[in-house]
Amino acid sequence: MPEADRYRSLSFWHDSVPGPLTPGDPLPGDVQADVAIVGAGFTGLWTAYYLAKHDAGLRIVVCEREIAGFGASGRNGGWCSALFPASLARLSRLGGAGGDRAGRDGAIAMQRAMHETVDEVGRVAAAEGIDCHFAKGGTVMLARSAAQLERARAEVAEAQEFGFGEETLRLLSAPEAADLVGAAGVVGGTFTPHCAAIHPARLVRGLAAAVRGAGVAVYERTPVLSLAPGRVVTAYGSVRADVVVRATEGYTPGLPGFERAVAPVYSLMIATEPLPASVFEQIGLAGRPTFGDLRNLIIYGQRTADDRLAFGGRGAPYHLGSAVRPTFDRVPAVFTALRRTLAELFPVLGSVAVSHAWGGPLGVPRDWCASVGLDRSTGIGWAGGYVGDGVSTTNLAGRTLADLITRTESPLTSLPWVGHRSPEWEPEPLRWLGVNAGLRAMRVADWEEARTGRPSLAAAFMGRFLGG
Image 1 (cartoon, rainbow, N blue to C red):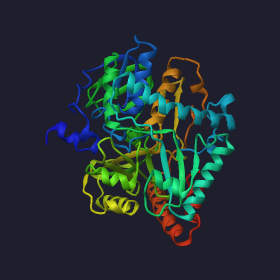
Image 2: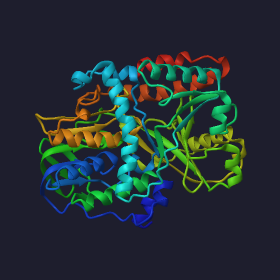
Image 3: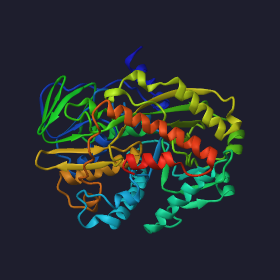
Image 4: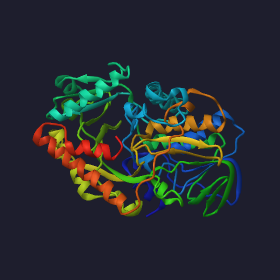
């Protein structure tokens, strides 16, 4: 298979991105830079983008093992949302670099920054001429059982407790929810306007072109073997730099010294063939809101610009030793379950064809809380642990890292996730047992709730185990 075709086979998004997917040149040998970035996904590219905007004279080098957007940045569900993996209550308890932004005020500032970030992604896409199919239609989370409706009410109550009204998150009645997303068995739900559906591979590939145009050196097919203060060692030479940024997300455990930093958990997706207008007359999704429901084992979907449904969820196993391999991207049993769930949500799709099926790893820190920071004593910066909520959070991370690296004082650098250090995951086989037990518990929780109509005790227990 030609190399470019291999990359197109990674996902529907890669397959439908315009332009070639031929890798750029690798690192030509030892080079000197001001900032070296490991990883050409959203985190690394946003960081390079804002650094170049701040100071066009900075020598910025990005090293990528495959091609820009190879990993989660090019394979995700395309939700550019204001979701952050830690709740407002959790954020208010963080002890990072927060300073005067710690506590309740810090949580509120973080949520507002996430709201603003959705629009910032759209602004940059427009300014750089990146047609990423940006459609800010919000998010509808459906409640399809009494337990899910109780969860919806609790989420709205928490938002209100922190001063966010209906303009941020509102409870939907059954008719209101069904009018937006015509799924079966809907008893209510929630709606937030703070989300845009996007084509993620178009965005990440366009962003790579934009940073190259700004003078950033992006070296593809350049595996990084190790990083240390002042130095990134690759298969083709070393990059010496005052600042080294680790932007490797689910691939982080492959770096020496970071084996237990995050757990790479797989999320899988399917995409249907384009659907006729008659189908959307029944299932709604006008304005392209992203959608899911409030079950415990996460599902997520969007209507694409070419009228497909791109639909994904958790359920694939975690692999011993935080292993990440191409063969793990496709689990037929999970694809079958996703297809079945999609038909349960929308019975009109019972016989629709699935054109693409794919997957990939995302990064899960031990306390389920993303972080960003720069250790000035070593010059090493980092961002990640997005738990699948990274499309917009990476942009906030890139802006924050740019401010930290250039010593620019801003409201971003005092947000509560700045400087947060998640604990390491347990050594194997405890990590394998714990993560897979958690996935199984979420399946059991959904079964339990379907039978009892009450929130699951299993889910509550796992929430405590995972630091929720």
